[in-house]
Length: 67
Image 1: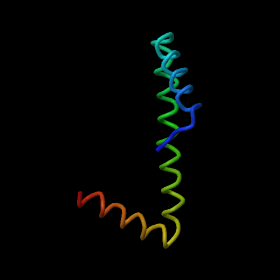
Image 2 (image 1 turned 60 degrees about the vertical axis):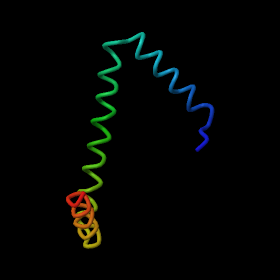
Image 3 (image 1 turned 90 degrees about the vertical axis):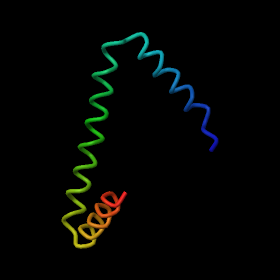
Image 4 (image 1 turned 90 degrees about the horizontal axis):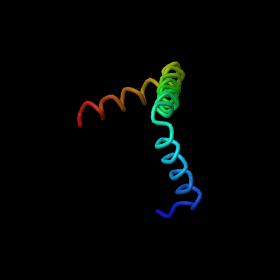
């Protein structure tokens, strides 16, 4: 898969930021990860309120448990 050149530029900018801000980047990254987890939980809560959603969640859980 070929990526847009701007992707690598963003990776380089983030790496530079991490090197230059060893304590600050952890807070920013932690907030990002927390927001992703909260977003996923909210999605599953909304999905669970529908009949089809409940069925999909059950299927997903069975797949994860069988791995």
